[in-house]
Image 1 (cartoon, rainbow, N blue to C red):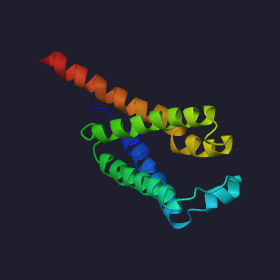
Image 2 (cartoon, one colour):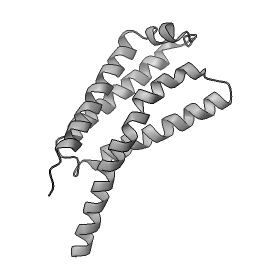
Image 3 (tube, one colour):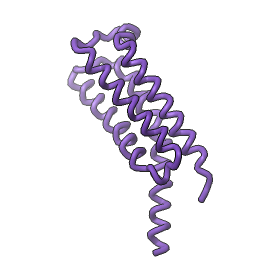
Length: 135
């Protein structure tokens, strides 16, 4: 099997990013809203809960990095979140529920990971196909 180093590195970087962003959101929930000029939500605990979810994804990515081809379901779940997050943002933007400045989170939380996660999953799919053809 080819070297999986870049897959592992990608997942470790995603893990570190998610753990940092999640911690930032939990520990300083108002900061993002202050620097973007967006009104903070009335129930800031929802924002902190999103931070917790993002942080938990970080734990999953770190664990998946040990063997990305074996633990690909974690990558699938993460990839789906990175697809559906921007779709939800676009809908909220269209409906006037979110200001455009909220999109900064979409760039770093979702868009930058599309290609690397897709390539990891593509490799896993190709591995599956080649194993199936051998049967």
